[in-house]
Amino acid sequence: MPGIAIRRSSQSRNVLHSGVWFLIVAILWTLGGCGGGGSEGSNQSSTSSSTQESTSSTNTSSSTTSSNGGTTSRTNSGIVVTSVGPGIVAATMGSNSDIAFSKDGTQYLSPVLTFDGTALTSMMGHRSNARTDKEQPVSLLLHLSGTHVGDGRVSFHSVTNPKGESLDLSIQPCVPQYCSVLVPRMPSMKMMEGTWSYRLQSPLAQPENFKVNATLRTGATPGEDTRLIIAPYWVQGTRFNINNVKAALAHLVAIYAKNGIAVTMRDLTLIDDSRFSVVSLDFTHPLTTELISRGATDAINLFFVDDFTDYGALGIAAAIPGSMGLAGGFNGILIGLSPHRVGSHVDTDFMGETAAHEMGHFLGLFHTSESTGSPQDPLEDTPECLGFRDVNASGSLELDECTGAGADNLMFWTPFTSWAGVHMGQDVLTPDQRTVIRYAPIAQ
Image (cartoon, rainbow, N blue to C red; front, top):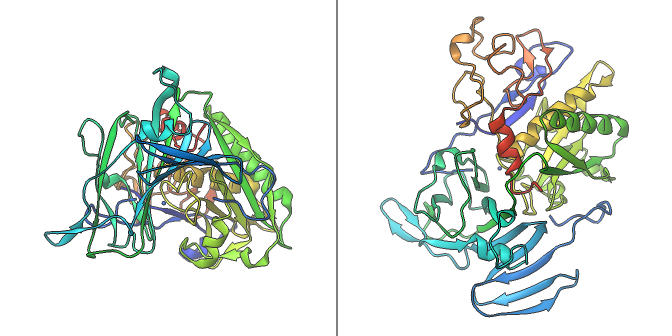
């Protein structure tokens, strides 16, 4: 299964040309290891979202009015539920302070933990007592985050739907300090009403730092009226013009519109802090975490910076998927302006394509095929470019070798053809890819 993608410039491959290209860095995982990628800052635009918090339970509760005008209900379940957007809630499920582990062979397992997604969403008034098609469960994202998460530490051992069916966690990747389980990861996977259960695993008897959250979405069956909300941010510098960012965003909108997916773009938030001009691609780096944590919880956050400390990178999503609906260091996408320069100007169409590609990752899409032709994404209708097409024996499948086999797909692994560095536009999404995007927990 593909991993996190990092777009890189030509010199990362020691090839000189006028364009840029991207290189996969595949993060491998196993079921026994890891499976899986805000509150807005003071300089956020006026488009920031308001939230409501409550504590969910099927038992008794009390409620108070919070400082932001929302309602906080407290029950004996201890689950805190926050309204993210229409039909979307984020729930705090537990942490190292209240989840114990017991020895099981060579590892430690948590007890079976359960939650009722319908009950959680109904706490915020998004569902009535009368069951209608417009109030059905749509999607779920289980988050596991903390310094003791990933890298062979705490991860999901199992996730079981209300029918008692176990999900395939081999397609649920981890990155350091963040794991997630997305439902649906593919059209055949369904979100269901009722009680879900999960267990955590760890090599440690009692991990010291982790928490479990969930983002749940209810509503009508997603269709062409589904909308993605984007919150763009630009770290102001002296080398680039704001129009570069605006033009790239316009091209991103056009790519998704061509595929029948509507995008609402919020006003561009300007961040006047030179500390963030050049940041690390490591989302656990304190500076990167501080920047990404400024992102809105009810939108897809795109952060445009001058460049990266990691040589030659073009852009990266925090995870596949990112932490939709959950504030923190995995709630966004980084895009570099400098690496998209061609000569003396920024290729804004190419930068918009990079942003659209990384947004696909953030919403749960993998590369259709990796650079060697294997592995492929889990979707049935995406084209596969297999290893036998590597006619120049370079070890990497290029666009010209994959013409007619997915080279024009937005999620193809590279935007450049062969060693010459010729860029080819990619703006195609298959029906299955569009379904995953429309069912994303953050979509509206």
